[in-house]
Image (cartoon, rainbow, N blue to C red; front, side, top):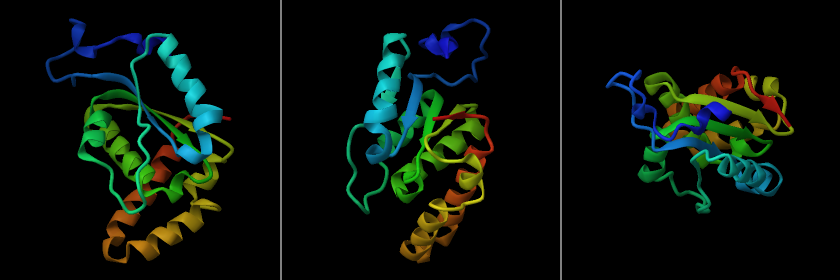
Length: 168
């Protein structure tokens, strides 16, 4: 990850004018209750010590509240996204909305996604097996009127699980 220390990708003369203006090197996506103290906080501190500009949202979102447009913009302004997938990651609509945006940015502007599988098997994420199946069923019940959103979230989970990542 040492190559992420570049503060702004557009400062290099080898980049074209269509290269996005990166404000952050890394956006951290994680489920607070699962990984904050054990994985996310030490990772964030290590990235900061290396001079890697990292965004970690520390605001707790109330149940039923949607992800803010400011947070979506931060994702767009980040060159890399580290997605820490834990057993309860998929139970958070906020995490799934972040992930859907991150996957979209990977496709549209070339954001690099670095998944970390924290006590979960990538095949369980990919195949939507326990505990991900349970979370998906709950989302179907809660979002009956927006079933296409549930499907998009499922696809995003499969796509991130298909990426090469690390296991904790």
